[in-house]
Amino acid sequence: MKKLVLAIAMVATLALCSVAAAASLTGTFKRDISHVSAFSGALNGTWTISLNGGKYKVSEGGTVLLSGKYSISGNKITIGGGGSGDFCRVKGLYSFSLSANKLYFKRINDQTKACRGRVDVLTNGPFVRE
Image: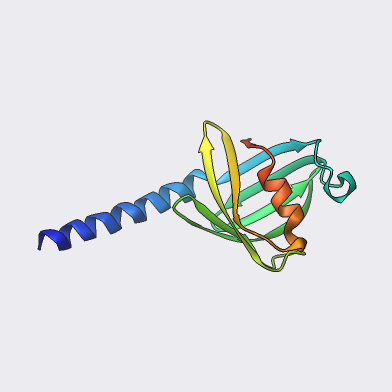
């Protein structure tokens, strides 16, 4: 019986952590890119990612380029996979950390060539909460 109660408590704690992680990522985060040579520098600019209720929008210079769905499990986010404007038709898996107002992404699995732009934008520095 004690093991069952402990197991239930652990599951509840993990569920609450996932909810807290999802809530912490709700909002709009921005970053400037000026040093990426991929795509002949086409990724350089001001990028914004808005995350809210499992839906995301990615903008560059104020123009929405991508939108779709994301999911969070613990400190991992699965993003993409065929949303509006998404040239990268597979989902990417990243870990994330939010320190103060800075959001960092680290690629776990996002390996196709079509996804190189997504990887470069997300992982080459922090996004700052607006």
